[in-house]
Length: 472
Ligand code: ADP
Ligand code: MG
Image (cartoon, rainbow, N blue to C red; front, side, top):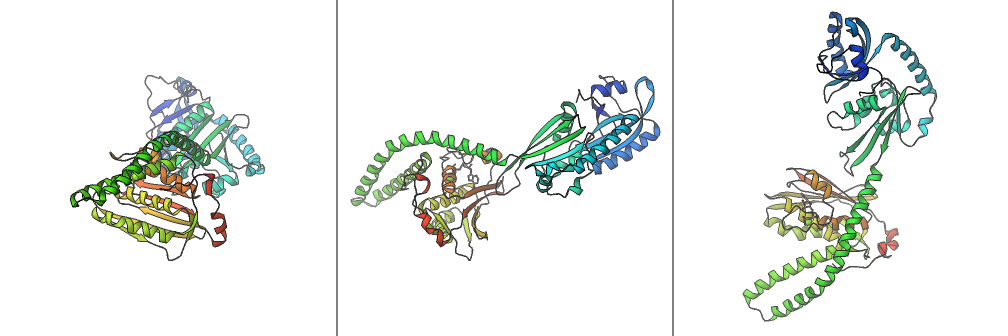
């Protein structure tokens, strides 16, 4: 802002100067230690109030005011103003009237140029061209598609309307515009978490092209790049788990098998009391086995026996299995099934484990009872969607960012392996997993699987993802 060549001010709605650049200090002969109100004549003062009202609606507007400048002289100055509704601040670019008329002429020439030159239309990203004062002159087809607007809705509007379809933090637009005016370029990274399927990432960057006196803004969809980055990070974490798990599994699996064998032997001659203790030992051994098997699935590439599975039937079996446990905790599991029979290609035991993990997490998040809804949706004939929704405590943003990382847990007795296992298995099934959560309201996991037809059955006999079948 300080290095902008044209005089620029940041004002509040009452006309109080909040920030200025060098050029403005010189024009108004301002004393930096005391920055006060704009000194206007009486008619301009009245005009200002009306102007600000209109500016709040349009976000961008121009007007001429009679202002006291250096040497106590009054001068008619043109104010090109942008209003940021978040901070309620006004960024005003000031030009003398002679400058302004020349500028208008220039802008109309650029406008003609940008209308006849449609090369931007062929670029595979959104491009928006504005004049130097921030009036949108044109946008390419991709930008129309991306911002979901007709070009006529944005043409001749203020540059900041580009941001209308994004959720930005307070003050971000003002900072962006100030930086653009000062450094001649600016960029913002936007995270859109409103999409159900996945979080989207965009980079919006503008460059002031001094030669042509225009601002070129480009919107890049960085979602795929970020998703890849997350995948690599996840894979790296899995590799570490892999090395650890391989050695731990070796060490523990064998003694575990002996323990199981001897427990069975002990059961033969046990009295009632001993049987009770032995059944506790049994269930604890099962839990150890399950942790071990989740670790092993995460640890290395595995092969799975893939078969054609009827999803509705599979989910029903899991729900019925979990129901008694849920009832003990005052939790109801309602299953809303689809009337259609939907087949997917998958591994039965692993998918069951996935659904169990998700329902178990849902149960663990509901401390005072409630309902878990498991729903199958098949709007699309190629995708089967399963939703598991709870009325639990929900997740904060730190948990949402890390929940699929191995060993990430917020529970005192958690392993943090459940969801890492779920994610890996879903990906091995060419599926997608997404999550929505609100603190104190609940969480819903959405799983999507490609639907198989009987013609695709042959492909299922081929071992998937070139690896070793693991009995869990
Ligand atoms: P664990 O259950 O052993 O903690 P998971 O990988 O299954 O490990 O889950 C990781 C973390 O994700 C949990 O500790 C919890 O904080 C969070 N989480 C998972 N599912 C839910 C849910 N349905 N509601 C709230 N938090 C959840
Ligand atoms: Mg869990």
